[in-house]
Length: 281
Length: 108
Image (cartoon, rainbow over all chains, first blue to last red):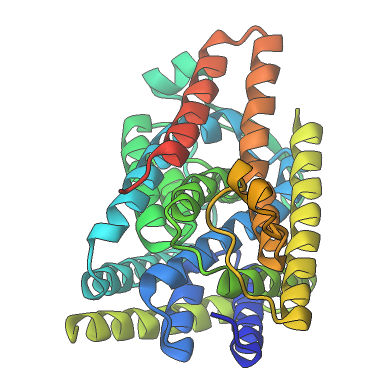
């Protein structure tokens, strides 16, 4: 199904989504999918297919930078990827069996959950984590890490605690990724930060590192099962990348707190819309 | 290890973006909207089907894009083996297996 107007609209929508995502460091598919559904009238499975490929693109592009800065905890990331990829494959296989209405409700609830976690984060001042030693599993696998924090001008080292819990949460994040066509960062980052006491910067970088693989796992199933509408996915990928590129240039210029509040508002609105539209189906 | 991962990611995104862009542009120009699903096989060659539709180029772009993180996993497995880190070589290999498994599973 190819239509130039459609393609152009998809380009614009995904560009906007890409910019927002880059400015806020979050939001792989979470804004994209609802926008595609509400503005283009695309069914959720197709929107998810387009979104998931775009998520692979943007996270790979972002991870290219993060990895070099040594913020990424590669071992923790790969370990958690066991959970996320298993989840992603499960979710992606499940998604064809679940109706549009229910998926929309699940999506809306996830959006609200992400909005709430962001809201709770904005309130906290000072350090975003408490330093704890590795738990038994993390110690055995050597999951703790360290990095140089340029802003604080100190070497930060941290242990990873409650590893099994984060593993479980990562599995859920993976399932949602496969089910809804999102990156899942909105769930992984709080899990690493709050549950396992990984500093925010490292959690963000590691999550970005993982999202590429998780999304790839989902995308493989989506493409394999022909959920991807190529002529929608192509402009969405291009638009999101372009938007993310532009957005990344402006991250320093805009005040973080204001943006976060805006984003929380948008996510809440979209979340409620998704739930309402899903219930009505 | 970080350097290699970073480079693979970069190249992958660049190459796939170029292909998707070219494919999309060609679709717009030629108006050829035939869909590539179904892998090229002998049948096509025998029938003399023009099996390079613009959407194939888009498809190739997507394949490269999705393979990029997979390549990274493979690279990390090799790195772990080289560093004699058996545990993580195994873990990373498991992840790879899951990815391959996911791709081979059809829904029916």
